[in-house]
Length: 597
Image (cartoon, rainbow, N blue to C red; front, side, top):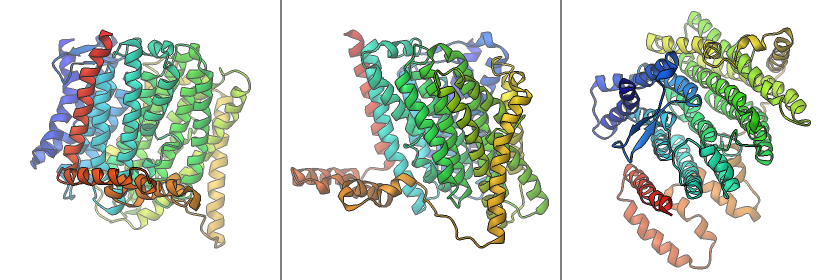
């Protein structure tokens, strides 16, 4: 356990130190950047070690680290650490070649390493304090990845991302304080039971679903995703969609009272929101012209399907162990597959050689079929496991989901058909530079691993056994949605080549925010809110609500102007640092006071 403890610590501190060297000290030595690209290697080794020797798992207490934290792996965290560490490592190796001639290479890998430390830390966290600190570290560090290019769209996307992130952090910390005030506990052991019997149970569940739902990208909290992905560098998009949004899912599994009874009202809400997101995101994604934006909407759709799984767990508490297996398998499948698709966009645009294009197309098609759940792919096993748990629901829910879930596969197939068309158009105008080994090799390895991951995971989780789902009925049930979606995609494509159809209505990324910005005059306050978030700077954003107030207006404006004058001399990094310090201060002094009562 002593050596394992060192590996736990190294998994977090290595990327944390590298991030500090590259961001704060601005080290420009290539060795630091190469080390940062391999920063998740200790976490990957830890994942393999604990899977190979399960008796080596356990909790590690580090009272001297930060405010005193507890790290460990359990059945819930193990699959998340596995695919998270793999995806960060592949994206890092890929990113070193992809960003090789970028003037901000060191800055990119600095924020990349800091985000990695937060992501790995929250997976290993075994108490609320450390989970929140690592979650905040990942969230605020990822801002540097979103705005890396410095373009106007990147700054706009970063502004919306950070606003929603702060709102989410506020909801999350409120939920955590309610949990502590009710049960006086900060460790994850027994936290589900504590939430289930808490007098603030419904408030906690609502805050957890909304606060972490922003990070998970569920409808209608998803608007930052399609704005951030097109502007972020491709390796950053891969980890944003494949790994970081799963932090919201992991938080749901940690903080919701899953397995502690049935909560049908909240379960129905999750199922309805999940279904709405699964179909809505496909419809909006089809109206996009950028392949990365389309993949972002695909992530919203897939997270909607995972939300359905969480809803089933809330409705059928006694079936939670098998629900957890199905959700973990689906998260593993989606994380690796979506990472492979995003990296495929960068590979496809790196060369014009026809031979390479055919190979790249084959890999992208394979990943697309896996995402849609085609027979004998990892997606087939993951979707079959998820569909299996929906059969446990009472009343007409089982039959309804039995029909609607296959339709989501047809929608995903149609969406992937549009993605392949956009990718072909984008590749035709590619830079034509030589396809380096550092680009195609990590991408190809991820494509293969994504296709095998769930099959391999069955050795560690016996319930997710592919043999249980391979039957003529299940294969036929998985095949018809793929054929239906593929025929629709091919029909639309063929028709568009024969007849000159007017292009479909284009829905801008950030769909609901754009809708708010075009409301009728009587909703001017909401219109102004969306306008400020989308188009204007920090000053007017803070003042937009005050423009519609008559009482105390002058007093508030004068105080805000004085505050703004002071803050204008501070860097964004200093403001974020002080915000995190204030939160840490509150945790250190508020929690002991509550526990003494």
